[in-house]
Image: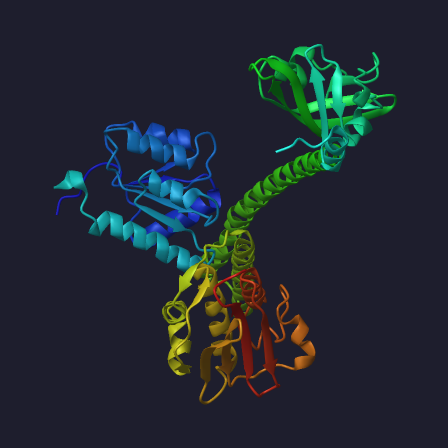
Length: 140
Length: 375
């Protein structure tokens, strides 16, 4: 099996503790080999403007500068990233966010559990699903 | 038919519940009944005498603007129009009377306008109530706006609670776990136990936040009333319970009558009642939960009965309070919000909820919903 080059996961997260926990969870299942971190929405858009698109974007919603909903919207508007899998990972099950995210074409909406074991399972399930099981449209 | 004499006509006019006045082409009053004199002042009309100059004035109601003469109903009627006005205020001395007035032309035998007749009445009471209604409406609009702002703030607050309070908890829980994973050898077992306590307490706070948000959602959510098959709803509620606990429990389900209610809210009430029944009967050798429903007068009564540890009725009034618990945390896990949610759901549907129990004798929770939905 040939390893695809380039970024596999774009992780957009501003909370350093959450960032560390998420990377640790991904590492525990060897899913953190080629991970790019963006610490705010502007960095995320910058990272996506490069040549190689990631296999999946893990996106927090509450972000400095450009918020997650706007990042999602821009990803869907850009023909280059229109079909890119985007998983929203957020602390909140409140507010109009869930409906809005699905309207904007998010692939999954995950509320990060407080319990670390449940959190690890959620993150690694997402990683495994989008990295290994899901057939992306551009890989056919 | 012979016309009644003038004296009879005068009585007829006085018997009417409105003021009536007739003017000629020169604007002189020719007829006025008692009610008209009451409003306009004494007019010796039957002698054919016009009103004295300046006897009364007309203003646009509620203002200091003279009523434009060409718009006065009687003047318009003399031009051949049928006129109606509700914005005239008649002032005489220190009295001012808002009136509603109608006027129409009166023709002679050749079809020429000869007179104009006006009917009018005092609308002071009507005006006062209209102003009162306007005031109340303004007040109401202001309150609604305040409520909307408060509601918006509550939404924002809930969002912040949900987002900003959960995130640090995840950090505490996660790093306690990492500490144990990375430094297990150098951590004494007592330190590891203490870290486990921190994690357990952290997760409990996470549950408290989730339950508080659920409670506030139950209050905020608009009721979406529809016919609800309670049997379907109950089965769906059962899928949300801990399957291991459910497997141990004998569930005696009787067919339930349908209700009119909000399916999402009622399901939440069932989930909470059932999980309580299962939780508190778990210590029994044969945990049993029985569910029944029947029509009773104008209500539909449901109950959930368990053979669990029960409670002392002395504390029954605390049962439905937020954060109220009748059992120690090391006996039964819980946040003390479940029954508060049940009560809010039932109350919002216009129903009642109560419980009967004896210590060690099981508990029965009853709730009613009005037949045909909230009235």
